[in-house]
Length: 231
Image (cartoon, rainbow, N blue to C red; front, top):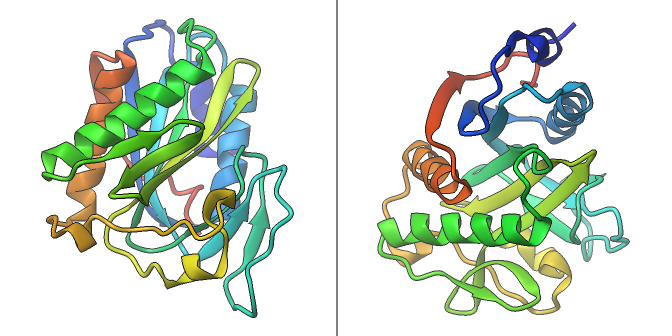
């Protein structure tokens, strides 16, 4: 029985203003998705919400409505998943934050949640003197028309999993083999390309704090790693 399953019943006091932030390091995509699914299946009304901060090994991922494959040949694995959205790429140097939230308990709609996530990303970029923008009907955050952050959420029984990716300091060439998030000729960028200081761990903490503030959490508890998630 893994760490999450053992811990789910350990929270006796419901507090919707508390959130746990887990720093997981670089982890396998498929195993992490399975952990999120299990966490969401097992959680009950007293379980605190969580943010998982991590990187992935190189992988293309497809949303459940996507049938696009990368152009040409590639050694990068392709994984179909149950999140929303189209095809994207994850790899080292990209911050991924998964949001395991009980939005039913919080009385929060999905559109409002997306707005809050985008606002948290923009606030993070502003801290590093980067101006981020959003686009109508195209979720994510952009810097001078180039995408720097992507979103993909799944809702099950009123609870979310999956989340966002923020390009910090990564090799963006794998994006050239796909229509990023389903948009032809959409270019991507990174925080590094804008001249920002790119300590991923520092940026992860900053982004988690901005997200927590936008979402209305008053207390953050940091946890280092979960062995059952790691490859």
